[in-house]
Image (tube, rainbow, N blue to C red; front, side, top):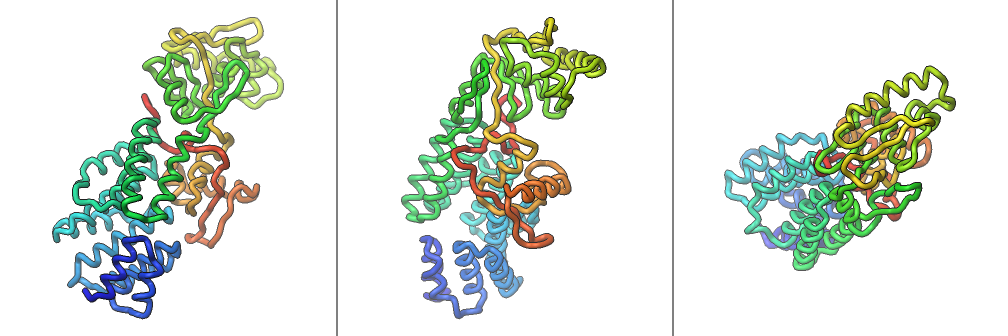
Length: 406
């Protein structure tokens, strides 16, 4: 490796892509192509970066397996940043095996970090934790330690372990400052905002107030009966009843929770569950059937009693009933939560992260774009969707993941 390539590599490691480009911009040999690709990635031109890295991998050829694997590793990171979640994971596994075989443990470990980050983005937190647990962090430089702690904090935030998240972010700050990379420091500070901004709305006794993540964590650990509109479940002491696949029953549970300790009238329940404006006799019969189903599901947590005007919810072991609502509601709240990270997402990546069909996501995106909520650019498979971050809110509770006791 010549002195120019080494100097460009040091500039990239220090977060100075322009200095790196000044050294290799006129060169087309494989190492220079790879460094130019990395520099363009740091500058945000991801399409150009990916093209350069692919040229470099082809130019290295089979005689330089380690260099090719490093190019694949960089391309995998670009795919994550650009939210191309369908990028072939097997290619990353192959690159990681090659790096381990040739003794490049630092980059092999970094490949494991990328795998964990991919699992985090699609909400598979158990797999993300297992991927992190198998990584050797002893030889990591400060920048790698910082990004590792960012993933640890992301998992903790999604699991509502705020103390763990704060500790991980503190370690990430220290490592990023030692690395001296401004972009990494800014990313950590942005992640820390999730701990200090409202994450949900608490609806109780007819009043609404905002909660931070720490307050949500404390609420779910208390003896309160929580009708959780973030995950469509009813949560009591040591028990959770999921109603995610029972939208009518959840609508009834939420209406009963919002009216507690008073009763919910039949007109209100029919309107919330069935969308009807008038509770005629057929709607009342249907309401009795659905309330009977809800009563059966919630029998360990609460009683659902008939009253003169409607129905009332009475917790068995809890002292009060509250509703935990997401900061943003509507038919497309989960999509908005993912787009609120400020990155450009494809419809296929959103479908993968949400565990739904791409066509369903495309219809929702078309509706959001028509309303001016999201913006799109590109065409066909290259089309991407973005949305400005939601002001004043964190969307952790809207993202696809399992909360405690799920």
